[in-house]
Length: 150
Ligand code: HEM
Image (tube, rainbow, N blue to C red):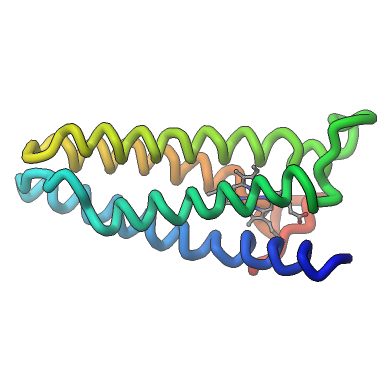
């Protein structure tokens, strides 16, 4: 196994925790500000950090997907092996959808500056994105995927 592969894989695996903490924090703040009746300032630090973290994860994921990972294949019977299918199709599709939703949420909320509605937009789009991310992570308890904790 190459040094580069090991480094990128561990960075991608470990960064999941930062992504999860930032998304939960951004959603929590959005929900509490919204119920407090506060207007959305047009930019929220936590929402921005959450957005950046998923974009970094997207970049690392693409490097693994296109070049490094032995679990991604584009020829042969991709669907027959559960682990190959998971990374080539399911993890990829789920995470791309989640990143798109979070990006849409952030930019839509930006246009709702000075409205209470912006907080709801963050909570909704980040919330659905987080749910999809949680479902698409190869958790150690998911059989046949051999995912780790870090
Ligand atoms: C927020 C988004 C994402 C999160 C939280 C996430 C999380 C993870 C985690 C936890 C693993 C398992 C690592 C391990 O146990 O060693 C993994 C593996 C992987 N991810 Fe992601 N991922 C995300 C997005 C993406 C995207 C967008 C792509 C592709 C474009 C991608 C491609 C991969 C690949 C190819 C692997 C397998 C690496 C290997 O072990 O060879 N990921 N991801």
